[in-house]
Length: 96
View 1 (tube, one colour):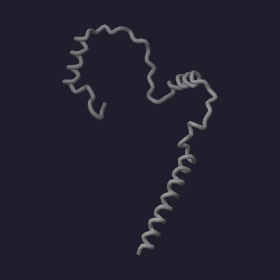
View 2 (cartoon, one colour):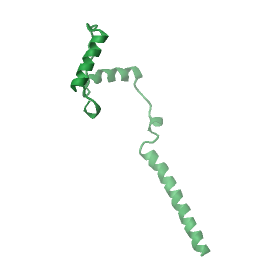
View 3 (tube, helix red, strand yellow):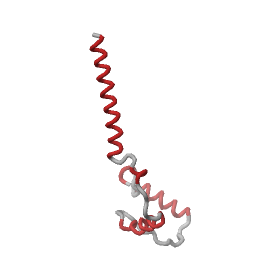
View 4 (cartoon, one colour):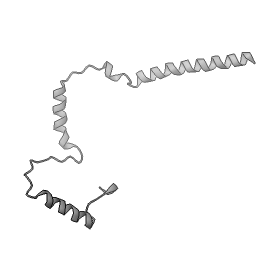
């Protein structure tokens, strides 16, 4: 029985070592250390400018125009909000 127990412990240790080696190879194979091996060829300002130029083409993007000052007072806006909330016109929860 001691030989069986010794053999099973040796088998478990062997499988664990194979798994550890496979895990490290897996990480290297699928890019776990990708950023350490890449040398950038473009300036960060160039990449940011390209991203800013591509941003309007994204889904649901709204270009904000320069807004004009509101003609309503804070009290007027608050009164409209109360009226809309009482009428059920303000979406809440998952509907918003």
